[in-house]
Length: 156
Image (cartoon, rainbow, N blue to C red; front, side, top):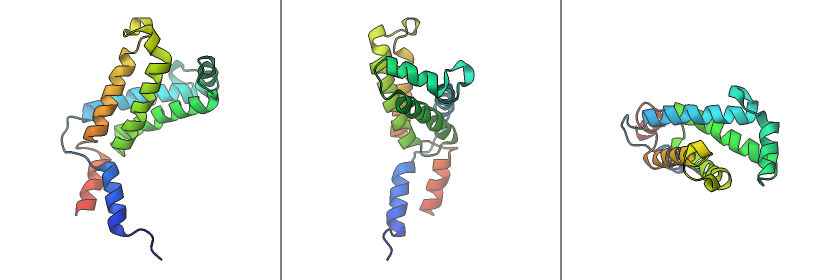
């Protein structure tokens, strides 16, 4: 017995990858994707001067985000994998929504009490990444993306 027919699957996939053509999202995807990937690599692997999963987990526990290892893996994984997805232009809408939520948590739990400016460890950088993520979630990947390639195959 066939549970899902091709129309249902195509509609489901299409709703995840649908995008509007244009190159306007390309610099946003690449720039934000590189930043998110690097920050995720710091949290998960200790690359680029980061503390790795264990160090990040300890810090997260210290600010009340427990269990620290789970929270560190979730934040690092969202940033690392989400960033790679943005760069490739694959599943940009759902990836951007996960990244937006990650930034909202970072703003509320880490930066908000420090005010706006980065010089005081404020939330301005997190806010910029949140806004970019929300824009990509609404707009989609745009041209020169895997999402666009898949969308073109589904509509043929």
